[in-house]
Length: 435
Image 1 (cartoon, one colour):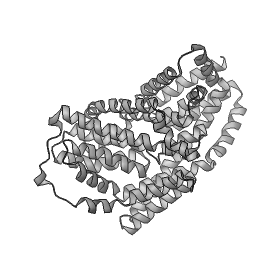
Image 2 (cartoon, one colour):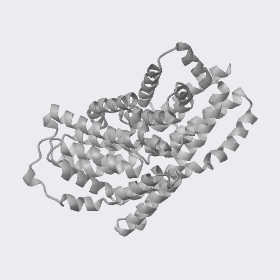
Image 3 (spheres, helix red, strand yellow):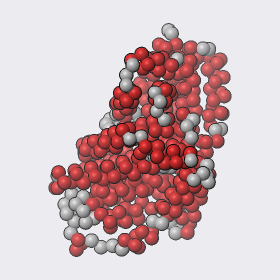
Image 4 (tube, rainbow, N blue to C red):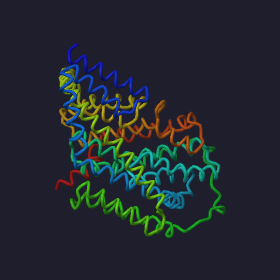
């Protein structure tokens, strides 16, 4: 077989392994090792694997991942999500569907300090879903708002997915993280507007809340409970934006402040601290395996000449650049129904990144917008990781969750279209960093 055919066979084999629920890092290593050995020699494949296992994991930029993960898990254990939801609830409950919008908004804010879609969805499922059902919200709508809000943790910095994209493409991680801020805010507002429209069209899903039955702390008191969010986000991301910190230093500052917050407020115990630490080790190990595997996969693709041939094929098509981008996003959307966002990112980025940058698009813009497109995959059957997480915690059947999130797919597509049509939504803040 020619190297190109080996590359195609390897890509198909990788999709099959992922469909069989083989862990993405192991699947990529297996395909890459076998394919590299076939095209070159087994000795060359083993030598490459031996060197990549060390150089891939020893990269300094990777140290930002465990720090941001640790920060998010500490804040999740400190029950910060409950206070965030209570504050947004107090601000929005007078609106029809206010609880639904509060759930999405609180999820976005929590995502700004957790950096994890799963952590955000898990936390808000415990906090928001019972409250919405208490006020007779439709269970499907309650679960859907929790799920779509949870996906924002993958977009809003400090997102581990954004960091992974930066490592895969060698784009500046600081610029990528900052590039996710405005799109994250915009997507949050679009999804909140979608929730309002859903309730407006189908009022029975969210009955009006009786004001006389609303009790609880005042808004200023609730705001005082969530001071950690602007402080931690402002110091870590603000320091990164103004060039005071490197991404790793920003992660260290955020993790240190999160630990200090948990200790000072006595919300962190030895048991929850140990739980956050052990989960950080587990998540970091999985991500590091994916990074090592993605490097090996990149070398496998290079010897099969797949990226170069794809670029030449696109040139021969003589398509308008925006049509090429549209086709790429359609591919991402379709793959989102079959595998999780990290798998798509590490598989497709080595092939698509050279094509997109070759067309003159900024790599930071492509990273943020492609991750926005992948958010829908977290909610799309049959994979839909976030939908399953929310279903397992809330007790709402997963089929009902999938049906209820359908209107929010439209909201996500609108947000992607806006970011694609107006690149400055992504690039405004990163471009200011240059100055």
